[in-house]
Length: 313
Image (cartoon, rainbow, N blue to C red; front, side):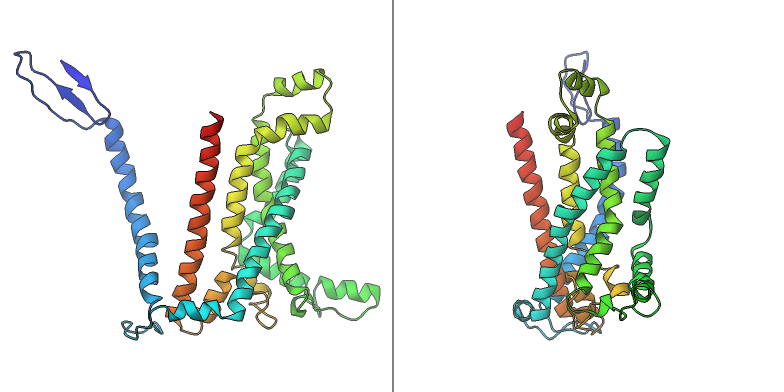
């Protein structure tokens, strides 16, 4: 007699002598084969660097040789009183707010307008999704030319209007607004495609039924489409927050953190004041703070929505 288990097979001999034989099932073998490379890569490129960063953050170290100048938590204390770091952290929070309250609503509205399968809608999807395909550095270079007050589009507009040239990226008040504009332009197409996929999965008979009952377009959106999009919205918010905390490639070609270090994000601050200035211990402390923020948000966000799903069931 044989009994199937989750991890293998238990067998019993016909003579009545019980023997327990374990043979791994195909599912377990497949799990090991595919999990082991992923585990090795995750450990090598994520866990070990984070452990090293936590170790380096306790030292004053320039990256050469082995760290020997132990300073404890002084790097973190310096960050707590560093005006540029606090401003950079605030900029990252501003990007989160822009993503949640401008970028995602814009993506949702466009998705509701062009989600139906039609050749013209396909063209618009391609146009709106194209910025996301471009590399971040390329996008930054394109927009740096557009904002250029001497030779770019901004200069041409100034000539047409017969006004003085306006250097947006060099202006203390408008530089970061320009960066957030580029971020919205760059990433809203990604979220739009997530919403389009969710909208196209809604059964048409469900929409037809509520329409026959007398519901208008706004009521269809409120009572059918938005509830169906809840998983997509949940995932989109998660990607927006985590992505906003890691903005870097767009900052460097646009402003490189200027003017007067007013447009840094956490990652560009880490790069400028940690790596470029060979202050690896200080930069590692910034990386640890960024990791803790993202990890805390990820676990809190996931546990919150998992709890909501469990309550709903």
